[in-house]
Length: 242
Ligand SMILES: Nc1ncnc2c1ncn2[C@@H]1O[C@H](COP(=O)(O)OP(=O)(O)O)[C@@H](O)[C@H]1O
Ligand SMILES: [Mg+2]
View 1 (cartoon, rainbow, N blue to C red):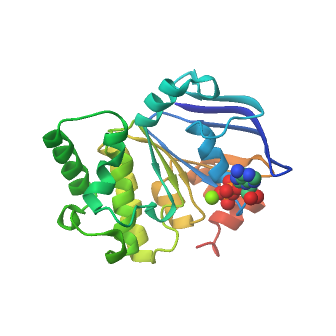
View 2: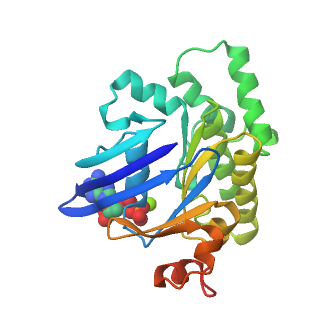
């Protein structure tokens, strides 16, 4: 379980998080929505310990993340995959080499085991056929699948998804949404999904929270929010949202 309690954070002279409380229950996808620049990516960076709150608590399985030392943070990041916007791949490494990177960071597995694990996750995301291609020569959807494989390669219990369908067309986006659901249901991953997309939120989400002025303005199940009269819920999940 991921738990943020009353998190405050100032950045660049602005109060970005202002009492944010959010719980991601085990085995679920929690979708975090909100206008651009409200602190969604900043929230994810608190969960993996890149940023520390000025005040408040960030816990993963009851352990306080800001109090972790370097070794504990490394161990946490092994249990927590991070899918960056657009996949964030290294252009001069092949798809398979990009996916293998976290395994190399987390100690030395025998070569054969690394290869097996890399091909296992590439198969899971439907990218096994492109293992030896380079990121500039593959499509945006394929780059994102590769980023997801890299996020999954250490067999994490959690995955943080930052705008997983940004820049993708609706058909490719839907394939990514299906993968996110598969990762929850077949791999048993607990997800925190940042997105602007109604399709992503309603397809992948179990619970949705909408961030405004540093805290959740509204929070509930997908069904509750889809029928909510709250202006933000209507803006993000109502008839005109995409
Ligand atoms: N390291 C930083 N230093 C200063 N300001 C930052 C830093 N990281 C993020 N911000 C600011 O915090 C706000 C929230 O950023 P972010 O979480 O990336 O927004 P979003 O909700 O679009 O993901 C933005 O105004 C951004 O400019
Ligand atoms: Mg962001």
